[in-house]
Length: 295
Image (cartoon, rainbow, N blue to C red; front, side, top):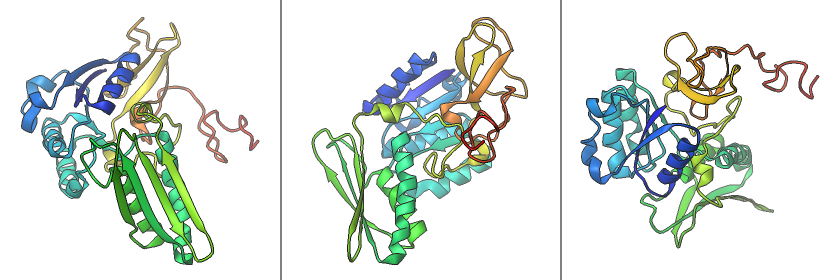
């Protein structure tokens, strides 16, 4: 796939490296060369399959608008712009474009969201929730997008909006704490990122958990991107699905492929081209009924 990476900071650089390791062609566009999205023209984007944005809250809005205008799929890892969600949603729906955003693409954080939802059941029983997030000094937005997602989850489950305390110090990658203080005990849930690779190596799941990608905005227009394994030469590659036929292997041109969901297609409703069995109805095991511990 031809990817255009906008923003080459700490996380953006890692995303580019991981994409190249997976065999993608990655082009990089710096924020300095793309003020007000001036570089995102129809000619510049003609051969680009997906744009990935890791810029800043000031730049991301114009970048999204340009991609929507040119009907180019964009994945947004930038946070701090969610107050504009209604406007962006309207533009995406009107243009029938593709946009996928997440406050955090780490597997651990998305599992943490589920744990937070379960713990928030204690709020109606007298537990008072509070959120603390710590990040490095260079982080532009406060509170973090991840903390806002945790706040939203607790608000939906516990019908209360917990306050968020933000701390900026040193080179902290990212720490999020959900405290639930009760009359007789306290629960403390912590997610502490060791490095940024967890943000760059996007989730690979056979089926999405409750918050697989943080509040996916446009399930109808999620990008149909899949990972294929060629049965002839064992080549593994990712491709955008266009039309009703599977793509050809880039190594041997074979159409005899096995398919699974790609990192970018969590929860995609598009049908698989492989002959793999349907997941087990009891536990969701992708190997199918009879292959899991429930049988």
